[in-house]
Length: 274
Image (cartoon, rainbow, N blue to C red):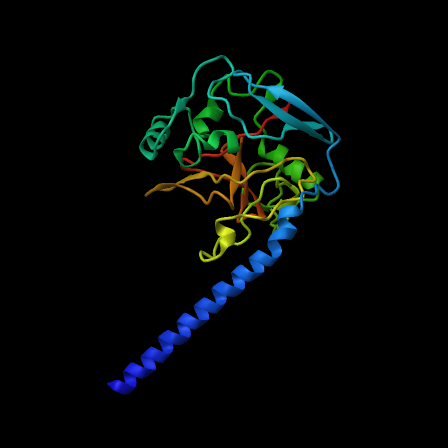
């Protein structure tokens, strides 16, 4: 019994030492790389030709960028009203969000139902908002189609994993690691979300080059399955609605996906000029 105890104790000590050394190494690397990430705010080569501005029904202003012959908003939508002045239901908890989806009520919320996130990331909307006949887009603007997103990515040589069955969208899968061209060069994302013991999880430092001017922020999104509704990680993911229940998603900080999303997810919204 004593021999077994000593063997077990030895194993436990080795595991603890390995864990401590791993934690130290991960965080030492993080600390050493911090100045390089923190000081880097370069946009790289700008691919967009000009910048502009557009206002929603509540007079919120949004920067815009033009890529090729298309003008896009470069900020997430923040309006709480449709373009005719009708209010969109504000879901303040999971129960209200699920109820709105169950009865096809257009709804918005903020990440973690925290209204302080509104200024930071904008609003998350359910798909019922997309189906409204008037919609949230100012006159002359529209919610993008998945085709718009595909052309946006393809024209900038950004590869995406494509799962949508939308007509005219190639079914090829060309795994991605190109999200840095979409990500804001000013706002950091988490590089490695799996390491719970890394300071990186709590103090993100990885910025994008934002060459497209899309200025993608993190901010998570809402996923709803058959059993539960939850927010994805705030600092590693983000997603934007397209028509026909499609969306563009940045997953785990680097991977870009174009897909079709059933059930009742919630995503941010960008606009494209008609």
